[in-house]
Image 1 (spheres, rainbow, N blue to C red):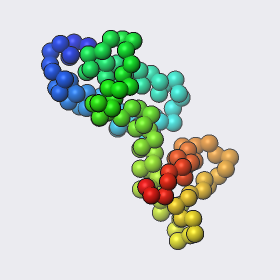
Image 2 (tube, rainbow, N blue to C red):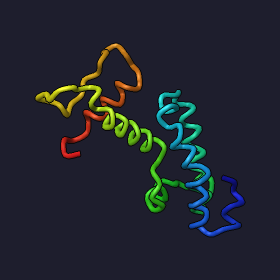
Image 3 (cartoon, rainbow, N blue to C red):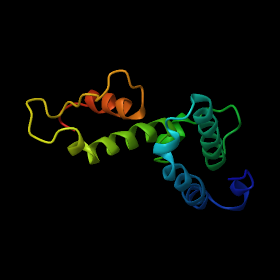
Image 4 (tube, rainbow, N blue to C red):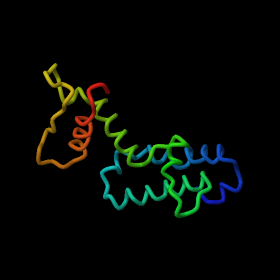
Length: 131
């Protein structure tokens, strides 16, 4: 998203172009590149912040945190956590094939493995039972 878009259209059209040009690509490969190095995720996060600054007509060093909430846009890190929790919830039958006493708590299959699956399980176990 270029900076010129804020001069050509209003905020609603700029928000629509954000969802069509940036957010769709972000959602497409989120589970794949969420396990990438933090440096690469930080680069994508900076691009997302610059897009929000463009939509909200902010300067380069202005904080864009309140504008994420007012525009109803989830941050990149929030999207990563959300997608991982949805992935665990969809595949919960892979972890427990029968009813157990603590069926809501999932245990990692391999304690030495530092893969994305164990990170997802830790996030899921941290949720309250009401969810």
